[in-house]
Length: 164
View 1 (cartoon, rainbow, N blue to C red):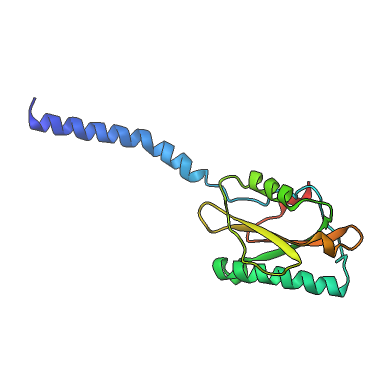
View 2 (view 1 turned 135 degrees about the vertical axis):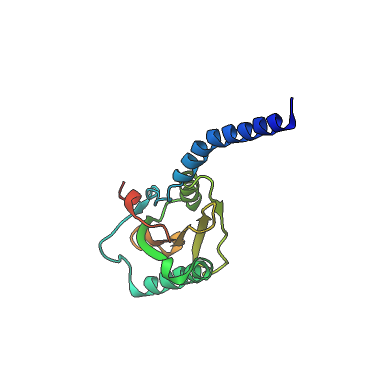
């Protein structure tokens, strides 16, 4: 077998491999869907109006602002949104965290810096590092009528999943 025939065989082999891999790689590239907002966790509800007094609102804003400052530094100020919710004061933060961890499979936890002593928070970052979902709420000791303020801080594009 001549070297010219051997080179043609190698070229043909690489072209065949390339022809087989191109559609697979194209499908993988096209299936890179943008993450969407997961459904609210059990115990989280929406309210048309802010359900708390001014003292609670001030604590809520301080706690949310601390988390927001950290997220804006990493993800950009203009991309972040705050979605205000109410949380049943009997809800377990670990159950909420597990709910979002399950729905954001493959995302890594980003521990928020310590902040307000009367609040808790957790955050998850997308695998490519450009999306974030953080949840911050006042502790149950700050309850007003069985609920506490909860904020979802995110740069995810839509709020479709939260209506369930």
